[in-house]
Image (cartoon, rainbow, N blue to C red; front, top):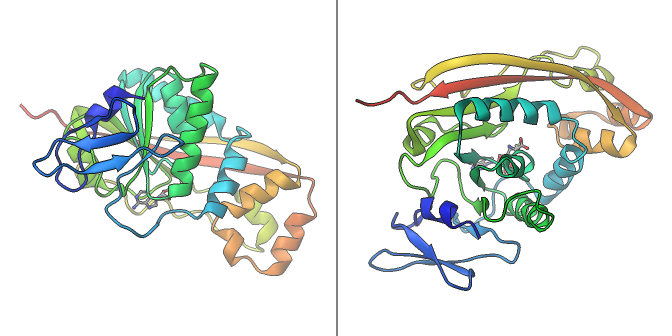
Length: 284
Ligand SMILES: C[S@@+](CC[C@H](N)C(=O)[O-])C[C@H]1O[C@@H](n2cnc3c(N)ncnc32)[C@H](O)[C@@H]1O
């Protein structure tokens, strides 16, 4: 169990700090009327204020984890690592962490990381992967924690993180700013204009470039914007299908598009990412 990560948590109901029970099974807040949260078997906490399940479905989670675990997006993970190293980030909040592909890598680099996502299946998968990695010493013991929560109401203390990462998930600028330390950074990643163009060329007669993110921060200071572009060869139907089904095109493409893609043995496509860095200015 990651006690330092637990110390950053705040009760989603009364905002009090909390502690983990001696047996590691329950997180209890220290508010006047204590609230308790069971630690799931796979090690995550459900700190969502909503009873309804939200975020990505278990099918989407399965497809994305099958694809990401083949490391086609590894260059992006490497670039994120370089940026975190440059910032000397020790404490990271991964907001909208999905299946924890990037989160668990950050923990493997020796950082204290908390991944939040609305999707229970994604968080469960992320937490299981973390346990596996801990058991083979790929992740130092007790450096990563996953919790189900909306990223618009993060159950953590004010000014507790060196960095918030926000990769392909909704951007909640005011909330990210609250949890960042003064001088801390927000890293936002979105699809660049040519992202998956090779896939779109198979599916559509006239594939359009991606429009770029419409929810970028307005008040934090932009430090840099860079583009990471490379070509990938997606090998075999199972990887092509996993990629296709983690995109919105899967649901809106007519049958002919599905059939054309199903006939391929390999797909060559551009992967194109926009990486933005924002800083929370130091308050004197
Ligand atoms: C496209 S996935 C990206 C996941 C991960 N960051 C990655 O790049 O692999 C977007 C994630 O955002 C999550 N999400 C969407 N809205 C959210 C919200 N309001 N709060 C927390 N997570 C949210 C979804 O459940 C999904 O896991």
